[in-house]
Image (cartoon, rainbow, N blue to C red; front, side, top):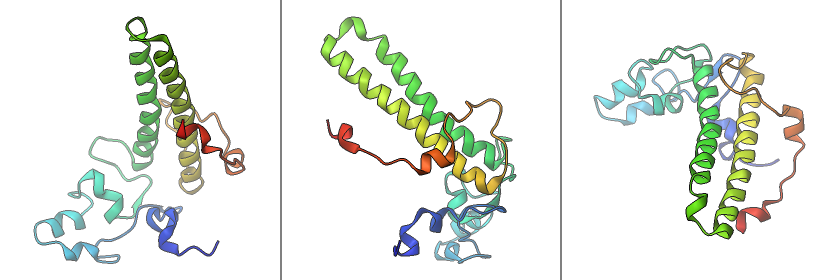
Amino acid sequence: PGARPDWLPSYYHKADSAGIGFDRSSTGTNATAQYAQPLNEWFDNPATCPKEFLLWFHHLPWSHELSNGNTLWEELCYRYQGGVDDVRFFQQAWQQQQSVLNPAVFTKVQQKLEIHLKEAIWWRDACLLYFQTFSQMPFPATMDAPVHKLEELKQQKFDLKHHNE
């Protein structure tokens, strides 16, 4: 409460029922005009704007098709799911090192990775369930279903002590 709008995430993601992203193109704030050619032209056009900058420069429909064939919604879901999958990969790789590590060191890192997985799942669910309130689109069948409910996540309070250990 009382925070400046540009201090809040919603100022930047601009999610609504029509789509997501901050329109900085020539049809929005025209921030693309500050770049010299050909960058101005590339950033101003969603078809040529690099994928990593797409939502920085454009407010696009949830159904916008990306060059890889995914819709914007699907890609968002897969990116958050990828964070969870990465932690699972880290856990598997760490598990393979057990026989060559000091047991106390192995266990401490293993416990940290368990926290990391729990929080990656929490983050995926929190972000995607929140954005789904705007997109009204189902999650792709090829990703893990959320394990949390949005209302449950909104009620959580955090104890960050374990992050400093």
